[in-house]
Image (cartoon, rainbow, N blue to C red; front, side, top):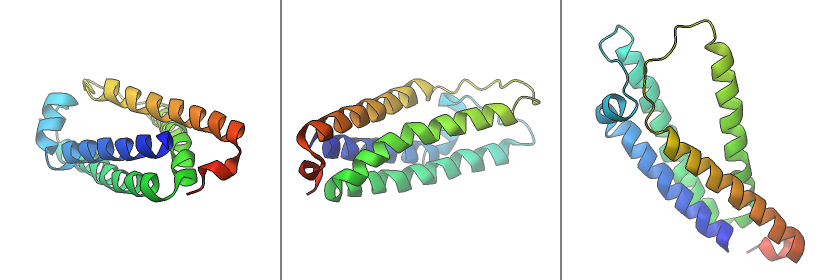
Length: 140
């Protein structure tokens, strides 16, 4: 049951992130990420941050639904989320090597790290419980 609860909570948190990245886009860009929007790439930066917010809204709704209706899928997603972020981190880092260093503050990173830790810890705990009880207990 805790996997479902955490999945729903993660989904709600994603909805907040989506709201911040879309509805409060200008505030988030200037006060949390501290992006320099005085350059010719300002519009591109806002589009990328906003697009990320749209995907947060999608994953938020998806995590709430799987948390409510599909525990096994919720458990799988809680394991997949940190993995996908790790892949993204390393590919962005690799592809950014030849660009000037960022001056952004990225104030949302500490919250994101907590989010990823909760996902990973819940995934590990869920797998341990599933193995102890048998996978049939997670269905339903």
